[in-house]
Each structure stands twice: as C-alpha cells, then as structure tokens.
Length: 233
Length: 122
Image (spheres, rainbow over the protein chains, first blue to last red):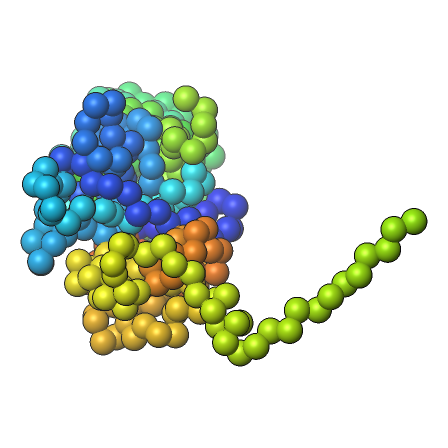
C-alpha cells in the first residue's frame, strides 16, 4: 500500500513507534500492539485492521537485515515510522487470490445488446459481487464501469446500462469493492487488496476511489475504518 | 489604570542561535551521528526547517518528499516536537513501496488514455 494524501488535505503526521515481536515491513498497515505484548506497533492481518495506527513507512532494520524487537539488554531499540492520520488515504493494488498478482479477467460469453447485463464465464454470485464494480478492459465498452446491482451465477446485472452492446470475447474485470463500502481482504503479504472476495468482507477499511485499468494495473483508494486516533473504540 | 511596558529583547547573534538549539536527542548523541544512525537503518528521517539544510539526502541514498513537502513530526536533528514544517526523507529503495506520487498518477492516467485511444489494454 502507498500513502496518497489525507481526506482533509492536511500534511501527514509521522511518529516513530517501538517495534513489537513481529517483523515490520514498509507499505503495510500497523496496528496497536495487544495488551501484554511487546512494543507499540504490530502488523495487520489479511482480514483485520482493528485498532490500526497507520501506514508503516520503513522497515524494522539493523545493519542491513530486517529485524524485529530485541530482548537483549543494551541492544538498539527497534522503531518504525508510521503515518498516524486517521484520514490517511492508502492506494492498494487489486488482485485475485491470496498471493495474486493481477485480477482474473473474464470474457463475455453471451452478447447483450441493451447493456443491462454482463454474462461471462465465471460466477459472480459466489463469491457474491453484488454491489461491487464491473469494468470492461476491451471491446466497445472499454474503460466503462458500472455498479453491480444483482448477481446470478455468471450474470452481473446493472441498472445504468453500459453505453454500447457487448459482444462475445469482450474482456472485463469485476471487484467485490465499491465506494463507501467497508471491508477488504488482503493478500498474504498484506500489501494488496483481493478483488475476488465478496463485498464488505474482511478488514475495516472503506473504499474511497478507484483507478480502474487493466487486470494487472487497477487500484483502490482506502481510508482506515478502525483507526485508534478516531478515539471511537 | 495600570500600564504595561513593552521591553524589546536585544537579541545577539549568539543568544538567537542558542535559543534555536533544542536539546533532547538520544542521550550522549550528537544530532549528526543520530541522523546518520537512522539513515543507516534506512528509516524515514524528519527534519525541521532549521536542521533540514544540514542534511544531504542524496549522499546516503535518501529521497526528499516533494509532492507533500511538509509533515508534522519530531525533528530527528533537534528533537523539537510536533513541528508542522518538517521535511521528510524516505530511503530511495523504500520510497516506491510507500508513496504514490503525482508523477505516478499522471503516468497511470496517460497509460489509460493511450489504451482507450488504441482500443485495448496491453
């Protein structure tokens, strides 16, 4: 994930926090360490941003090797820099699969002239992409996107029709993410967001915006939903 | 009615410089060696306007953040707290892992515009 600014247009607030037993890596979201655990910041999980602090900006590193904390007396204390603004905007790549590198693109299997449905080769109902996004990556509707309003097997339905008829073979992508919806599932490296998981599932982050491009170059902008400095929980 | 006398302080060059020096960095460490140590650990370096000119980021492989030039942080040089005009430096190799810049955004949209013109994404 990458820092892309704040909702409030303010400058980032950067703090250096003490590392926990977990090895911290730049570009992932750091969470407040649990009670009775070491340090002040630990890493998120694939499905939890609970009590998040913000984006970690550097590695917990010493002498060129990534490290975590040390329990040896006299050793250098491990610290990492964290952007702690509650309204920080994070840009993450959308992928498919736990270690995915790009979204699995689908292709139109049945031509539709009225633009109200997209019929492909893989299921959009399980996992359910209802309320997610669908966008074309080739054909007459290239770069056009719509909100999915219902799903059934391999058919995604939209209310605002795509501007042109789809033909067999037109490529498209879809994601179980949409503006204002909270819930993302991360890849195992905790840096990318899985587009193949049902809407509103996983870690508490809300989609703010999208860069919808080809299957290997599409991104979501997120705002943390459970940030400790919101003082809400 | 009481009256207030405003007495202008006569700053000398020495007293002005002395007032600008703020202690509080790591015990027994000079600012330079402390910043050098953070740099060797490839951590983000935040420096206030008074300290930032004393640091050469290119020499130690760091990149100054220019899209969002200021951050609020504790100065790694003089330890002043919550300084809203800190410059921030990110280790060059880590930079692309954590920052999405305007240049990157322009490049992405240019790629998209070219694809639409071409009729397909590569």
